[in-house]
Length: 256
Image 1 (tube, rainbow, N blue to C red):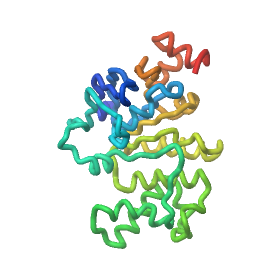
Image 2: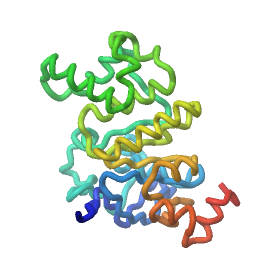
Image 3: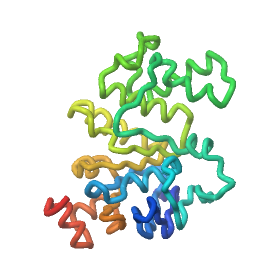
């Protein structure tokens, strides 16, 4: 049986970001494949999160931000003036570094985003909430307390709830900005296992400071440094046979 070849899902071409006079990203070009996990690594302030947040235009919220070049999802340039940003953010979900559950019930955390843009029956809503929580490996832990406040969950459970909320609207891409940095090792292992499971349905782009995590969960790794994309390749290659000395120096802990 022929092996399926993953298509390009996100294509960056000569993409630059400026915050006022400061250039945060310099001519980034890379092809991110669908239904793969792509990790973005590099020291603090190197442009990883800026690139991640450009994919669903979260950086639009920063008044001084300016953009050049292109980020294309499928056939659409996300910075085209005709793009509906609300629709883009449904297509491209986001999980933040700090878990951000709404001060609502566990059930309403999932249901809220679904009800914003469409009329949906209670039975359909129940099904989506259950499937989303199952997808985030949280259902068995919370199924008997869906009406309890989400703020009563542990940190690791809150982060998985945020993942459930992100996938409830059926995105194609899930962005994760250091989703495990505030979690204990057991919760981190659960989220990493979840990332591996989710890539069968979603394209996942992950910013992480933890190189071991990148090595464990990602298929491809991009190394950013001082606003430049230094190297982008299969994760195994980046960690065992990097082409650039800067990559090797970072991987081996000589800086960063």
